[in-house]
Figure 1 (cartoon, rainbow, N blue to C red):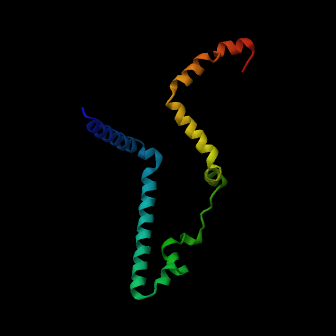
Figure 2 (figure 1 turned 90 degrees about the vertical axis):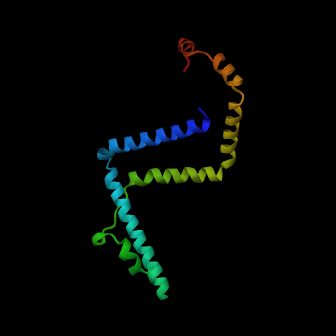
Figure 3 (figure 1 turned 30 degrees about the vertical axis):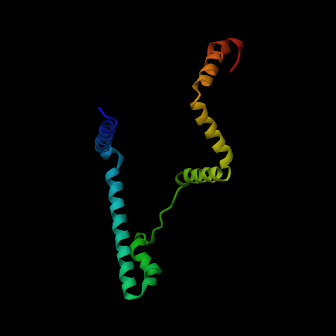
Length: 145
């Protein structure tokens, strides 16, 4: 079997398994509810863009970005503003902080990744170090970690 054919069969099998898994857990995970929300949001986006094109044709494009133009499509029901809990925003803030740290200190991270990639090309050093390391039973007998 050629590599191309094997790759296509693998992709098709993964796609089929993904769809079957999605169908199997759909009722338990609320995927149907989430998808409905995405469809509603898509309709709002479409309506807002359609309104923007209409306002552009009429020469009043600023209406699209006015409070009334935005609220017509994006206002919360009954003026309710959804609250974001700390447990929801904390992981996002942590990821953003890590991204910022990687951006500012990219040099050390890049050097570490380059050294790791280079060591993958020389497995003999890894094997030698792994085989010469003391076994866990030896460390316990000596009172080590």
